[in-house]
Image (cartoon, rainbow, N blue to C red):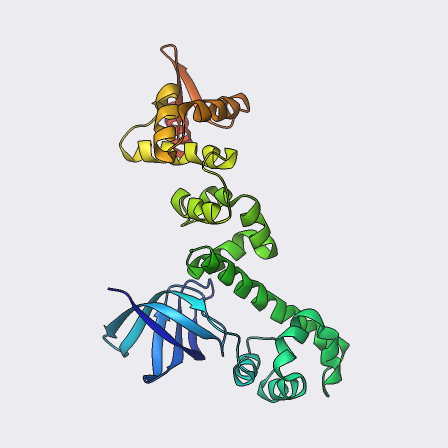
Length: 290
């Protein structure tokens, strides 16, 4: 059974290079310092978070909280901002410099970093070039945090943020908003169901053309998992309509367009149009060429 744990991130003990695993120390009310392990990019230092997961007993490190997901809570305090800036996460800022920045800008510190980084030059020891370095480094972290919040707001674990930023970079939110179904074919670990949840949260209709297009790839995958290498066109129309809970006239129209644009792998056999999942079609071609 999942449990919830709230607290403030005090220390990042370990962070893998690909952002797929992290270990941190969390200051939690009544519990004190808690070790947290999670298969995701760590939250920001000083950030208040709510974790969902389970308590486990590690053979070497003892009791810790294994987090499955997390979401950001309220805005950070001045102490939290100072701890975050002084952690080394932002290039060009150490503990002493972090204290001076927060001491000067107070609660407006994050706003200045994001919207008016030139003002950093007001701090002794920060020139124009150093201000640009600090602003650029903070911008990268802010984009990741914004993406995490975007995912959580739409019912999707922030654990996907690192993968999405690697694939889409700074345009991640814009690209997902324009067509969330692209994630099912472009991002490892995100399938049609996850992309569909985001799309529904963004207001995509049940019969949106992008949903139907992605639905055919999903249906072909389901058919392949059932042991079939390919499927006749009419059966694919019906199966996709069933999986997506739409009418066959809608799937027929979209499938006609996909075939006309040569976007599906097909073969004519016995007077029927057979359609393959792409990876199986390529395997069949490779075998045939040998």
